[in-house]
Image (cartoon, rainbow, N blue to C red; front, side, top):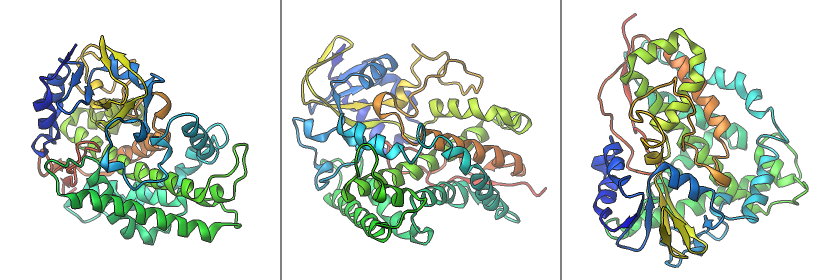
Length: 406
C-alpha cells in the first residue's frame, strides 16, 4: 500500500523533540510499509519490505542514480565504497577486507582483544574517586577512537582535529534545505575535504614504507585487484574512521542506558558474563546506533509491497523501525537478551552489511561486561539523557551516571 499520509510522521521523527523516543512514531509509520512523500521520495519501514529491498539488485547506493540531485553529496569526487554499487563496491570492499578481516586476516579482532581489555580497564580506573561520570566523554568516545586510530595508523594526538571534522560531517547528514542554514551543509562538505587531505598526507608518509597499520598496508599493497588510488584509500579511511567510532560510541552508550533502565538484566550480566553475546545482539535490535539509511536510489522501477517505486526515486530505509516490527519480532518493544532468531537490522543487510560489525560487537561486549562488573551501584542522573541532534546516528550526547560510595 502506498499513501502520502505519512509526511507529518516523518517530520516528527526527524524533529529533535522526538529523539529520546522515536519508537511510537515508527509504529505509526509501519501502518504504511511503503510511504510516498510529498517530494516524490519513498520511506520503507517494515521488516519484510526492508530485507527484500536491501537484497534487491536494483537498489543503488550511488547518488548518481537519483533522478533528483542530492546537494549533500556534492563535492565528493571519490565516494567511499558504501556509496558505490557493484562491481566497484565489491572491488574496493574486497581490497579493504584483505587487511581488516576474514578471509585474509581472520584473526584481526581476536588479536586486538588484549589491547581492547587493557584500554577499557584503564578508562574505568580513571573513574576512581568520582561520584559522577559521563559514560560518553569518559568512556564510550575515547575507547573506540583509540582502537580505530590504532588500526588505521592515525596519531592519537590528532584526535581533536578530526573530532571537529567528524562532528561537522555527522551534523550535515540530515541536512534539510527547507529548515537548515546552508552553512550546515557547507561545513560538512568542507570537513570531508579536510579529512581526505589529512589522510592523503598520512599516505605520503607511508608510501614505500610497509607497516602494520591499515593505511600503510593499503598504500603499499599490490593484491589480486591491484592497488587503490590515494583518493580511494582516503575515502575508505574516511568511512572507517566515522563508522569505526561514531556508531560504536552510540552502541556502547545506548547499551549502558538500556541496562540502567533494566536493573534486573544489569545484575544478571554481572552474574553471568557470557550473557553479553546475545545481549549485544538484542541491543542492536532494540536500541541500534544507526536508525535509518537516509537515501538509496532505484536503478529501475522496483516493486515493494505491491507499490511500484519509479526509477531514480530516492528511498529512505527505516532500519530501527524494521527491527521493532511486531510482524517479525515477538513483543518487539521488550528488551529480551534471551530472544531467539534475532535477525535484526542493526548492521543493515545485503552487500552493504556493516563492514566493521565484528569489531563493534566485540568492543561493546568487552565494554559493557567491564562497566557492569566494576561500576559501584550505578544510577542515571537524568532520564532521558540529552541526545545528539542526528536522527540517523542516534544516541545520547552525554550519559551522566552516579556511583555509590562503596
